[in-house]
Image (cartoon, rainbow, N blue to C red; front, side, top):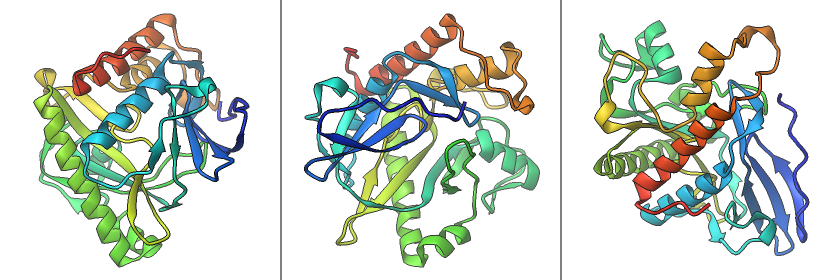
Length: 291
């Protein structure tokens, strides 16, 4: 269903907006409170089933990455109301750029679909003969449009980004995206994880400073693969929500073209997905997830 459940009431916070996973509030200070729920989305549907602790894992992982990256970010504080402890952050208001900034170092997902159809991804020509899971010689910037709730982000060309935000800003978004991806990919590889691709969201402060916002390098926004199981030419084992996608497509009996909502996840799929998110967090950070 694309109809969101009602956002929880939080004393001293005014609800502004809800996305597929996050609820956004304004605090009396004027700062924002961003809350990560346990909602799961797949194929542009918000599923009836939730993944316990998912919001806490996403928040903890994002905070860890923000600590590692030498890039301005939107975090002000983790001192949040008790009702959302562990799954929320206080962050600054920014002018958010209407671009999903995607970096790919491996071929999968919509990038593979584009490549199979055109030999290119977002207008960037790639060598012939690449397959599912192929490592790209050089990471590429493959932006997407930001879709409304219930709609799908669409891959767009770099020229479309220039037309949206201007040439100077487009170049900064591209270069910063690739720099962060390259740094994070190397860090993940040291920990036995392949960061196949990821997407970032950026905003600007009043003085024009570029700021990394939203979540960053989580299983919801990235493809994480176990490095010791990487084998191009087939679907890769993953730490992300591919478990849910695969079950919906191949085991549940759900027809994506029917217009009907996906069925509830089985308890086994829920638990496997939860365990996968926690495993990614623990392997990357070296920290124990406390729940």
